Image (cartoon, rainbow, N blue to C red; front, side, top):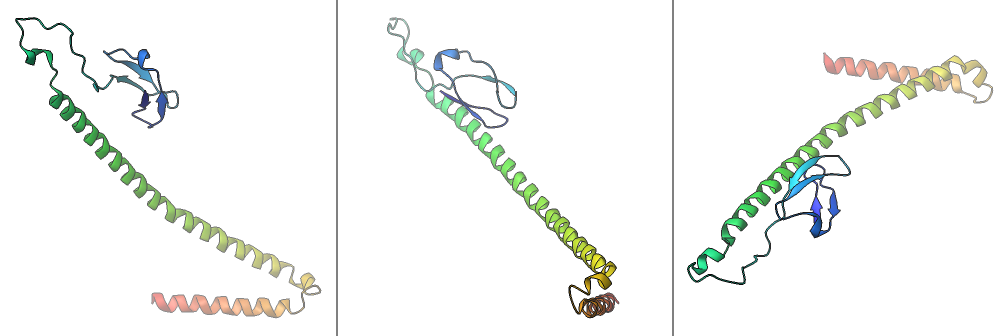
Length: 155
């Protein structure tokens, strides 16, 4: 028999004889959640001997009531699982944006740090990279133009 944890949905294979008909308390080995588990009624056992005084209707279990209860329980559990998955998806969508923002900030800070290093050692690096002074001056002018452009957009 396969039993699923109600909390973390982990599945366990348990022998049928370990769970009595009255049910028993189980504990998940993964998340340590405890719950009471009762075997579902899949088969109906009839008594072999029918007494003469009792009618046949007394010996049958009402299958429709049990299946209705189990089907409503299954529907409720499915609704809860769909709500949980919808919430999980919403949380994932919300957390995706901050990662992009954080990565863009790290990228911008890295570029600024490289520019500051190049500017600090521009006289020494000018021997290895000819024209570095001209490139940095053009970069500064471009940054000034961009800042003026954004200031004009805001005003």
